[in-house]
Structures are given as structure tokens and as C-alpha cells.
Length: 135
Image (spheres, rainbow, N blue to C red):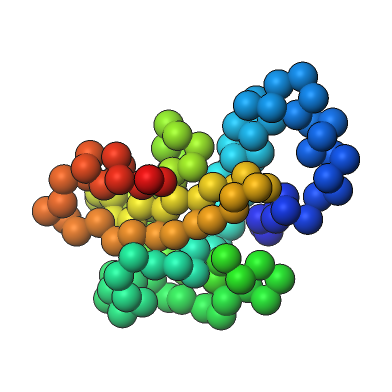
């Protein structure tokens, strides 16, 4: 599954989509982007930390997507899964034991599209990381 880059939509579609309720249009765009990323074999290219940390966790990083350099191919270890957060811009990558190992931030809004991934140490206070994402 690919991830839509809404910055390439016709500006008239943005205008029409946001005519009645701009906030809802953006929220739906971000929810759709999050859903696409949850189901794609991709992670953000921007990593807080080093690629070595991701590799040490058993994540196999592939090439950066030429069509969308915000993301790169990534194969998670067996039993790992992506789960959407309550905020549509947050995705949690959990290991085979259900522990959160990565936080993924993806803002799919056409006017400020950005994404990054943060390794979550097993002894980390994840609540403080959740509050720091997107600030």
C-alpha cells in the first residue's frame, strides 16, 4: 500500500473539501494518512536517534521511496505490529510482547506534511514521549 502525498492534490480539491468545515477536512486527511502508514511496509526516513538503533531492534531498512522521500521501506521483526494512536498523527509500533518500541509521528496535512520515528527504550516513560510528539 502506498501513502498519498496530499500536497499533490489539486488546490481546488482542498478548497472544496474544506468549504463547510476546514478542521474536519484536515482531521480526515490525517486519519487517512495514518491508516495508510499503518498498513504500509514503510517507516519515516527521519529518525530521532540513529538507523543503527532501528537495525539493532531487528528492523530491516530498505531504500528511501523515490516518489515520496518522507518514507523508506521497512520490514518489522516477526510479531511486531503498527497500531494507530488516539491522535491520528501518532502510530505505535509494538513488539511481539505488546510493548511499544517505536513512536511514529505522521502529519499528513497538505500544508505541513512531516513524519519521524522515535525509538522507545523499554525503561522509558512513554507518556512523556507522547506529550513531546508533534510539538
